[in-house]
Image (cartoon, rainbow, N blue to C red; front, side, top):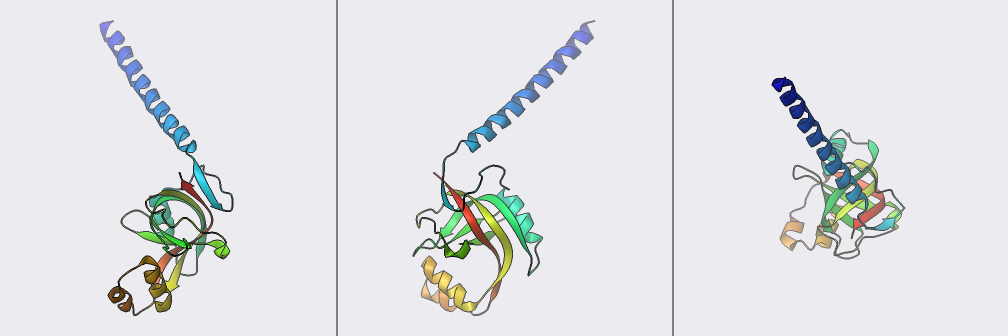
Amino acid sequence: MKKIVILFALIFIAFSCQERGSKKAAEETAMSENVDYTAFGAEIDKKSPLSAKEALQEFNSLKPGDSVGLKFTSSIKSVCKKKGCWMILELSEGENVRVTFKDYGFFVPKNSEETEVIVEGKAFLNKISVEDQKHYAEDEGKPEAEIAAITSPKLTRAFVATGVLLKE
């Protein structure tokens, strides 16, 4: 009889711990949905974005010429210092993606580095010309020597955002 009581007590404890964990996860999800964002571009929903790691997996499955619609969350690593007309987002494993804005229709604040964002749009691979690479390097304020060292086109991850949510 004593063993049965102990068994039931252990089962009760195990289930009550699991419930707390799922309640905590539900509370964290609800809290993240209550975060305020400033919107740029088209209206997008802040619910259910992919993580930066999941977005990287999507990019890694692309071949030149492919594109895929994505909505993901990330952190801004760099922004165009002249207009805010592009940004570089961190993916996982030290990888990045350059984000531009559909039809050059909106920009993000020039001081928004290290801010969390949710972006929605099209992901693809892009061959960047030497001229464009140098232009981006100038926008970032890179040294002349580094800009002069750019001598060949480069295949990169690219994203054209239709909408951006910038965490406040």
